[in-house]
Image (cartoon, rainbow, N blue to C red):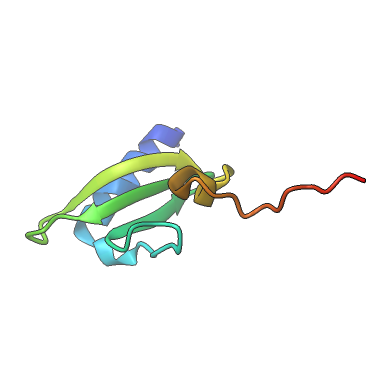
Length: 80
């Protein structure tokens, strides 16, 4: 299956079962995340409980905390 189709199908499934996505320490408390390897779908529930709002689809191999918070988990190298 083409990646775009896998992502689209996962979004449709999340709309029916939005609670399956997990919370991440680097996200706003209302956001959830669900992987579609290697991508990750970031979304939040609609206020009326009718579906989801997809906020971003990001390559999960990126430094996600840095992307969302401007912080990196990696410590700077110390030369010398």
